[in-house]
Length: 53
Image (tube, rainbow, N blue to C red):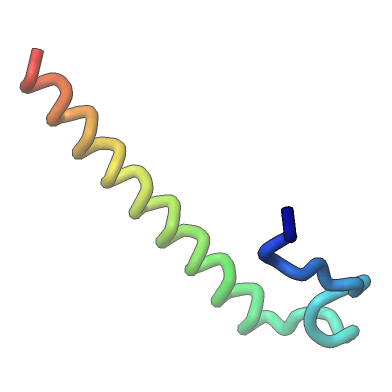
């Protein structure tokens, strides 16, 4: 069976320079948003499951 994805032979992604403060802040904000999204989704699922009991 063939592999659908090609494996890339790289050591790193992006430039070799360290991230700037702006880049670090943008990534941090994105991760916080993702966590909130997951928490809201799980809270909604839990609430629905409780009402079905």
